[in-house]
Amino acid sequence: MTDPDRTGGPVPPATGTLGTDAPLSLAPAPSGEPAFDDHRPPSAALVADCVHCGFCLPACPTYALWGEEMDSPRGRIYLMGEGLEGEPMTPAMVEHFDACLGCMACVTACPSGVQYDKLIEATRAQVERRFERPKADRALRGAIFALFPYPLRLRLMRGPLRLHQSSGLSRRLRKSGVLQRISPTLAAMEALAPTLGRAERVPERTPAQGERRGTVGMLLGCVQREFFPGVNAATARVLAAEGFDVIAPAAQGCCGALSAHNGRETEAQGFARALIDEFDRARVDTVVVNSAGCGSSMKEYADLLAGDPAYAERARRFAEGVRDISEFLHERGTVAPRHPLPMTIAYHDACHLRHAQGIRTQPRELLTGIPGLQLREIADADLCCGSAGIYNILNPVAARELGDRKAANVLQTKAQLLVTANPGCLMQVASSVERSGGRIGLAHTIEVIDASIRGLSVESLGAPPTSIPPNPLQ
Image (cartoon, rainbow, N blue to C red):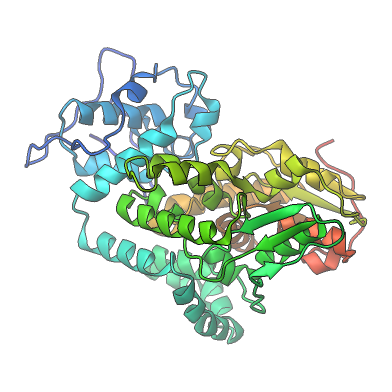
């Protein structure tokens, strides 16, 4: 099997085309064992739903990068089918599965309703159990999962990271490019780190303002809690201003999204059980989430814990009560007055909001309901920015190219502020914009709504205080 050059070199031609009489064949692994075991393999019925029509191809970021059939959704589904028929799990097969960003744009694009999201998640769990990665890859993944799902450990990083940023070393490293030459992975991690400000903490209970409309739980998250604490603070303020008591248990941990999306099934289940227990103790029926990837995973708890008799029904009820913040505000309606924000924004759809959760119009309607705000659409909006959880760390070269494409399209809008709903997207696009030499403010959707409710200025969001220019896309 011929694989594309992941370092950005010329892409070799595909060695086969699905739907023809000459499909790709897999080189047998030395062990000869089948790729998948009997524990929740990818569903043969779901694999059979794919008719190889090709509608997924232009929607897939990795196919757009390399033009390689096996790095398209239908190509990966073909490999899953081979595995189900007893073919071994080869390094080449795993490489194609690993190259998938999990953006789920193919799910939106597919006219046959193929559930690629369920297929790739089941496949990745098999890979993590049955495939021995190289030592360096195992070490990197081990370090990532020993840190990112643990808020207290991330909190310990804040001091050293702030010192690194304030010393000027961060700017010098990025400008020199020396870290990129030494290690693209280290360079990606350093460049992605957001500029840290004051650590705002959300109280366990934030009382409703005005007429009380209900009580909601609030996920604090991991990266969101420690690296973007202003987003959580804004979320609690907006919910309170809209008449809701906000319960944010301080003891809550990770939701398990990173683990679930990377095949660490047992770990993800443990995080999910603990979070369900925590919000059950808080006695809330609705849990509001301000991170697209977290919300997507929490809405899938029923599938994740379907085999657990003690949690299956609780997981189903919990998942039914999970709402993205924009989804929740749109459903319940807004009552807090909005003050004008005379500015232009470009709205970037986080993949796990647009594709995995199907939330597209709600944030746009909430934003355009702010007086004076003008929203501009981004070209190729469906194409992933390259963040994809930890993809930009594990696959920095591909992620960098996708980020550069996204940054160019964002800057082309000439907007003052880029708005999105996921911490990973904010970090990825900020890094790409800086690398391009461009300049644009960045904010979470809820921060813009919060600024409008509080009557703050455009400058408070990091946008330049310029008048609204003509829309170049009109």
